[in-house]
Length: 476
Length: 123
Image (tube, chains in turn green, yellow):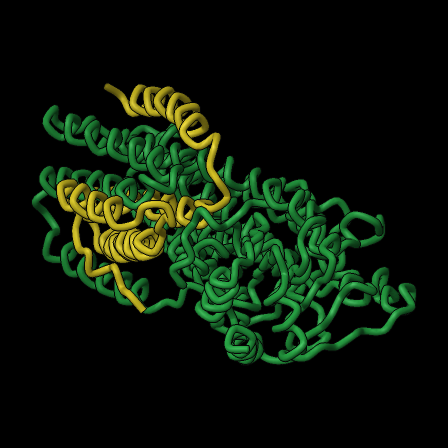
């Protein structure tokens, strides 16, 4: 065995710091709990924020060296982060979460690398426990960083949202993983090796890239949630080797809650997580390409005047908003139309599919931005029984979440996904720019149904016209 | 205590914390999925304290440079994640009884002493 083993490794922080960390961790747990109810969520984020301030303060209080480097780096990071966060439009929220998640994962990977060089700096070798924990946090953090960057690029549409696949994909990934294990064992046994460590780091980054490339744009939210969970675990592992248990607890809380969220999202889309990772969803589209021909009906277009009359004399109207609504920046117009209709005594509901928008709950955020009270937003299970007694269902920029193929076409890629039963309303109106299929690239037979009317054009323009026409009805 | 002991205790705490994390969010309305993801995303920015620890205890330049970059990335994660979550949640309001609840929440938020309501950008 190698004689000199790094002894500068971990030791427990002093008692006052431990007490501070316990307070921080309690605030995190309380904050996460409060984030699960709409009435306490905002305060919950502030409670967790207070926990973070305590944790950072306690850490800075223990170390007095290196502030001349640490403080500027932190100030620049804080400035970049806050300017970015303040400027990002709510529609871009999923890629923003992916970006910040990637930063956290990258930090964890670099901490592992930095720790490796700190512990092996004086020609010392790593103990096996140190080596394994460093390798683990480097691996998970790098996958999270690289995967998040690919997710960001796909959602930002810097690269294509369709799955990118190549021959022997799983085999190549498997070989890469085995190679990483091999390099990892070599580092653990020899207790060092800077070159090996760099190879390990690059290999882990490559694994993150190759893992996310084959995942389609529609599945990206599940991936971000999973990577969020990964970063939590990476943070926890860095806590092992540094002997910092606030990192362990906070990281574990995020890892666990992130995994629950991932499962909830997969369930909402009826897609097992293994399917998301290995299925290349949306790649094979020729099975459903023939839907239009098979249904054998043409599309019926309508205009704002006729539709305004239909809406104004309805008893119940349900709006089904999708990501297209947010892209057209038409949330305020939807609310205004809803208010007009409510003033005429029409009962108005909003039907929110769990995966409407580009991540679960995204549509709720987008409508909240337009001052729609959250208690008017109905979840799928509450609202589906309402559709058969609804006069008009107005589908705005939504597509896959109202696609009946999920229920009646076993060959469809979204077969089995629970959908909003807009097709059961007496009349379905679809506001849509063109007949182009949605983000997931799947045809929608709903557009060809007998009770479906299409109102083509930009959603915002169409809604402005509708608002004006409904007002005319009022005057008449 | 040896490093092995510290890691073992860490693992013990990790397992308990995972169960706590699973318990904390069993029931979340889909309304809050995005803010919850963003909020937990901010919390794993805690890695920044690991970066600070390394940056403060390094003995060679290479490790120092790596650690300082990690401090930058970690702070970006913490601050960006927190601000974006706060911005999102400041928009949520109930239709039932808006004025009382909002002011009450604001007061409580101020009492908690967390920084910067500058995040509440109204469009």
